[in-house]
Image: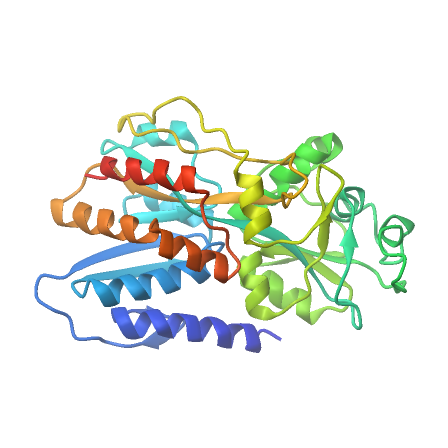
Length: 361
């Protein structure tokens, strides 16, 4: 059942490969390279991958001497590669622990360049629209609600005949920023979840036979599609790609809200950045979370996705990275993110991040 999703990712990979002469998912294309090219290598999160593919394609087409090689894996791998100096930049939905930046003699710059929403995709034949209350989705991922006709789920869906089907819960198998965002929200909603499962890139999910694992947003989406009665968490952009139904979630204000750019911006407008600097580089600390937004129009599981960059490197690499960042943070680029299932940065945040680009030198 991976075939359809893999085909979509291959098409996305091919867009970037044709432009940049890279190898992804086994595709090998060699473009003509101008003199003195600058190659930028990145790795990490799958959460923002749909928009990164498009941004990198456009940027490489415009700047024909800068080539971007991005390996989609997960946030944990991105942080590892960044700290191990094997990339020019890394992507992480879990940002990075500030203390880890003390290990970098070059200093680090951590910039939120896009944002997204974690959504719950499900596979209930004949049912495409489903509301899940806070009690319901917390209960499902704690292993307490095990059948789709549970009264707690039925209460929010009086017009739907829910089946007795077992609920199969699909979680990420690796260290994941998406898991970090999702478990952070669940921990904010439920003290019991925080104490027993926890906020982590690898949460301690219940050890039940109905809990399944899969690698990456793409793997979770594929396994949900494969198993009738399954539910899993993925980034909204990936849900759009695979065309799985997405649950409508109850937010803190008691409203059932769909994931979209508007509800994402409504959540991020509540963000408060710390009044501090990052170690070594002195760059502004732009690591902040909105674990459970208060607004009535806010989607409940919304978060930034960050790029991790070195504060000091070779001049040509630094210039290329700054050009790339300015392109990604432009109003046009941010609008495109909203068109494919991610969330454009609120304008005040976008300007703040643009001002921090100068710390990449």
